[in-house]
Image 1 (cartoon, rainbow, N blue to C red):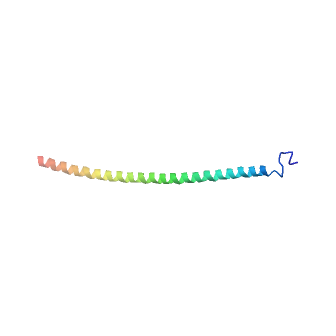
Image 2 (cartoon, rainbow, N blue to C red):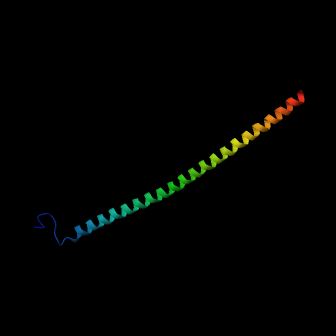
Image 3 (tube, one colour):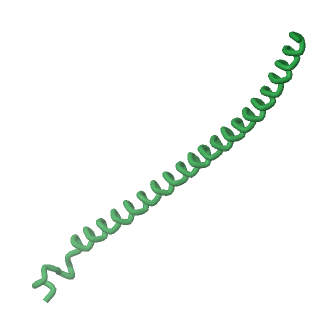
Length: 87
């Protein structure tokens, strides 16, 4: 009956071919999984780096704003004394 369906119990070549195909499928799956994990870890580091850069930029912007406010105050004092000298 097996020979009617094209399968012979004694056909080791067919079984070997099936095993090879299964091994290739598993190898490809694990390789793709490894690539996906490596990509995720690389992106995770990149995202972390971007987040740190944004945080640093925000900190620098905050410092600049404070320094600009301080500079404006200093400029106002200088202007006041300049006007006082003229009067």
